[in-house]
Length: 146
Image 1 (spheres, rainbow, N blue to C red):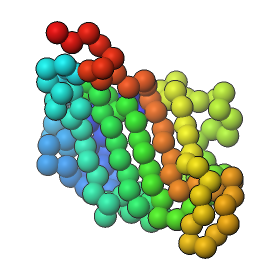
Image 2 (image 1 turned 90 degrees about the vertical axis):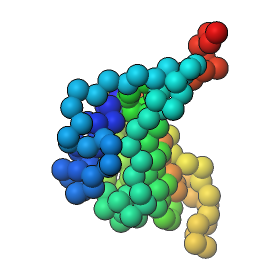
Image 3 (image 1 turned 60 degrees about the vertical axis):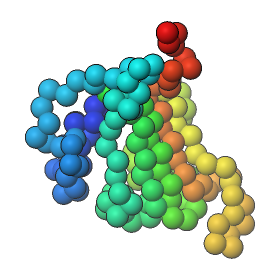
Image 4 (image 1 turned 180 degrees about the vertical axis):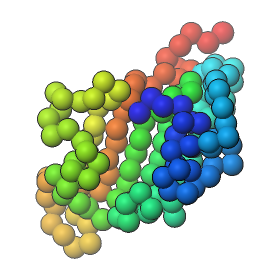
């Protein structure tokens, strides 16, 4: 969390052999030039991972979304192909077991509602998604745009 798109693009290139057309290991000295009022597209620019690459991270991932703000990864949202035990997700992604022991670069980790999936009963110990937030969202509605 909180890394810039070029850093994350380079990690994806080195670890998964996925080279983003813009944000990759060749992009040096990245600096975000956007703002939430007048240059929104640049403010929210970042790496977008195709679903086929998301499966390389873990085969049970259906979708891997990253939201960037002001040049930093603000939120990571992962949707799984099927519901999984929350304890298994914590183990696989090396997440803390207690909410009060979050890393410095994370303000919250949330798991999806307990929904039934593929004829499985509703179970609060299972989820179909994971959201990790690095910092509070700061968009045009949160600042004084003139």
